[in-house]
Every structure is written in C-alpha cells, then in structure tokens.
Length: 270
Image 1 (cartoon, rainbow, N blue to C red):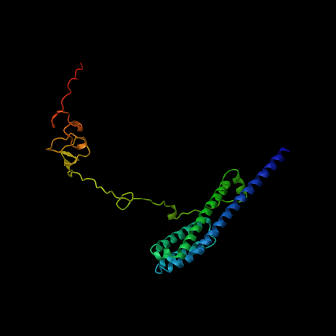
Image 2: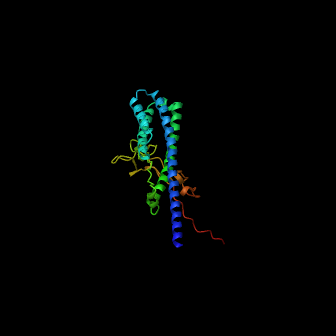
Image 3: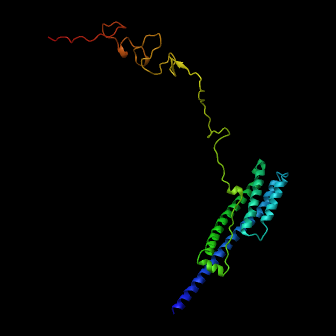
C-alpha cells in the first residue's frame, strides 16, 4: 500500500513538472512571435525611408546599398534568435549611417514624410526592445527549469532544451554616451568671466602708500577724513563744523578755533 502511494505521488510530480516545462516553452515561443511581428514591420519601413533619403542625396549609393543588403539578410527566415540578433546589429549600424547622411541635409530633416517615417521606426524599435525584455525573461525561467535539480531529470527525459537569448550586441547600443558641458577651451557653463585677474608682478594702484586706498579728495564715507595739507574737520562724516568739537557749536565766550573751556564750579546759592 505504501509503495502504491509513493508511485502515485511520483507520477503526479512528473506530470506536473512536464506540464510546467511545456508552458514555459510555449511562453518563449509566443514571445518570439511577437518580436518577429515587430521586426517585419521594421523591414517594411526601411525601403520607404531609403527612397525618401535618396530623393535628397542620390549620390550616397554606398550607404543605400549597405542598408538594402543588411535588410535582406535580416529578413531571411530560418535564423535562430542568436543569429537574428546578429543580423539586427548589422542592420542597426547601417541605419545609423543612413541617418548620419540625413543630418547633412536640413531640407530632408524638415520633410514631413521623413519625420513621420523616422518616428514610426523609433516607435517600432521601442516595441522590439520591450518584446526582447519579455522574451529574455521567459528564456531565463525556461533555462533555469531545464538546468536545476530535480526538474532537469524530466527535461532530459522529454528532450527539453535550453532556449537562446535575443540580445543586442551593437556598439551604439552598448556604448555609454559621453556627456560634457565644457566648451572647446575647457570652460564649464555658458558664461565668461568679465573681470580678468591681475597678472603676477603687475603694479597695483596705491594711495597714501597703501595698496587699494581711497584717492585724495574722497572720504569713502569715513568720519574725520581730511586731505593732506588741510586742517582736520571736526564735523561728522567730513562735514565742517562751526569750531566746536564733534560738530557742537562753540560755547559762550569762546573764540572760534579755540578748545572748549572746562566748566567752572557751580555758583554758590546763598
């Protein structure tokens, strides 16, 4: 009785693991079909794009031939996901050179047909990238089940194999863009210094024997400032006073220009 229970449990486990592997394989195949649909849409847009550019730059025959050959190679059926990724890399590189040619023709870049085709191609490539991420995620799950124990026993019994990734290996996709805000002279920012620093050894203007002093005749807003050769002014902030100290009027009985007299003793009140 115990042996029968063990056999039944083992059979149920084998069936469940087999069905799980089948579901994963179907998910991988479905994800690849979605990518294939977007790839063929991309192939349909490329001839129209080439004809549009050819109308403005007919002498760029080498670039047009390269794009046409890369498209024909990529559209050939029967390639595995890894081989297809390689063909797509060549096609992306050829399209990059085609757009580089278009940059030299402002009228072409402003043409409505070219802008529309470029936008549709960009949207298609975005969908291909999203489909590639979904496909590779399913491939990772499938390969994990095929390789780990004990599910690898069922995978080997029923000939489940590892799936291939669809990866982008183009240089323009892998390379990180170099971003710099410096100009040709190495200055960072969009402004220039208006004040040049003094060169070493250049003489600096001096007033009164000290560098950076105020020129004669300007008080700089300091109290008691006087000019050389003139008597000091007793007023506040360089204003002349009336002979008193700190701007006060002279005392009674005091001659102008004389120092103030100390106050006498208070009068005696009898």
